[in-house]
Amino acid sequence: MHLLQAGVDLTVIALWLGHESIVTTHQYLEADLQTKEQTLAILQPPGIRTSRYKPSSDVLSFLDGL
Image 1 (cartoon, rainbow, N blue to C red):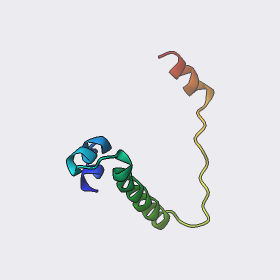
Image 2 (cartoon, one colour; image 1 turned 90 degrees about the vertical axis):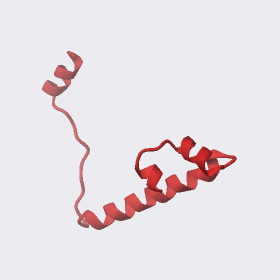
Image 3 (cartoon, rainbow, N blue to C red; image 1 turned 180 degrees about the horizontal axis):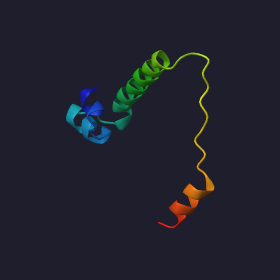
Image 4 (cartoon, helix red, strand yellow; image 1 turned 120 degrees about the vertical axis):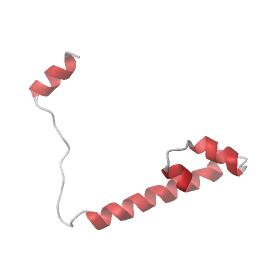
């Protein structure tokens, strides 16, 4: 878990642990996502809905010009 949280690629972790298949190592990724979801559930006040960001036409024009 510490390697994954430090940004080490999952395939590298699988090799280091001697896993024959990446599927075996994938469970660590799933566990990490569960930890993130649990943390977010604690931090986010209940009942508050967030909306998706919608950039203005000015912002989109600027990005198109890049």
